[in-house]
Image (cartoon, rainbow, N blue to C red; front, side, top):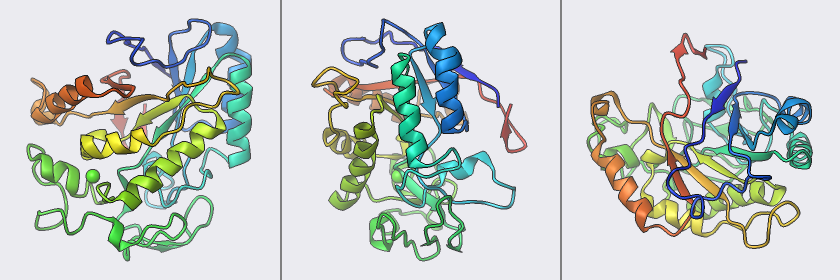
Length: 294
Ligand SMILES: [Ca+2]
């Protein structure tokens, strides 16, 4: 797996968007799909001694297991629950990685998927990374638990429940992105479950989050979730430290020649927001080819 380097562009304000790097380090490395045990070894062997500030890891939550194509990378972006058990390893291996990386000065940043669960066509059964039962067809994910009441089916106004017009922010945020079951983050229950998941990782010692598919969630909902996050674990961070948050905003092809209205809205929201929200854009050059990243 190719090692991707995120060249951090922390131009906005280090004071307001603090990644809590140790020893004035400045760079996060994305180790896409690496196993936790391998990342721990990489921290000790290379990243710590060479002065890297952190590692962005693949989503650690329990995910669907797909056969066609065989075990694609995007199954990691189809959670079926919040157990910390994924293709990258178990919760104990995750804890061990966080501890060992901290000891050599390297923080862990988590790729967090809270906009959606699995695809609508994900079937029913125990084809998940920890074997938890779920039903995509019934929108039933008992390991969280989420039921059909916790999704945006009634809020989305398109004919097939999918996003059809990326210029329409209501569709973009309330409808399904490529069939992914869209969570109703306006519900306090869903917000609470999302915050609980992120807090479980903060308590283990992570330094922050790369929030997946941010454009597909309402800024106001995200503010509520972020507002419920714990301070970072004082075993490794100063008392009162807030998690570093940077958000994925992919701009559709139609906006390549300029910023989208949605993007502008998020940026305005950021200026008003007291939380440590940091937007990153095109930090890595990713080329998709036949279901893999090269
Ligand atoms: Ca959404």
